[in-house]
Length: 237
Image (tube, rainbow, N blue to C red; front, side, top):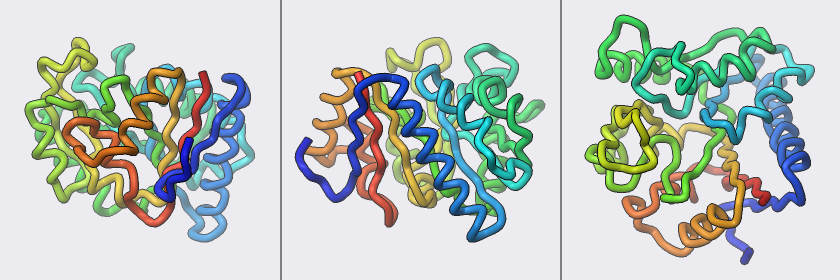
């Protein structure tokens, strides 16, 4: 890995040390934020990759009553569905740590457009997130910013933190093409970004992302080089 001022790259020998380092990073960032501001807010991604880290973070000696948890993105489905990011975060973290507040993206009884509007209102009035935990697909997507998505250009250009996105036709969106996603503008409002990567294929995609600037080709590029702090990337096989 050649030196790049936009990122800090951490290579780990096994999944256990990878998870430990991620939890250490998150706990430190939250502790600093609590010490300085008295409250902290973080944004989490779904998926099975970060879930073990969330479960370990839940037992960290933090004042969880002063911590707000939000989401990086969400599928347009019931929060009780097994594929819901809200459900994953709830089962891996919220059921184990008594957080002060949770910000879901899908709101019961609201349409997709209304849910996005509610999420943007909440984000506009919320404390800046001290950390956003991101993943990346083999297609270079992060959050729900999928290459080739119908609404990708609009989401990339949005000045609001969240946008609706229709990923119909994008293979990795699976059975849930309608999404609510953090935008590059929303990412820019987070102090730290942690990118969690597993496997050689994703390492190669990320290296390719570093060598270009076409965000539509590899949307992970939207998270590289924004904000004051370099993105911290944790990788293992």
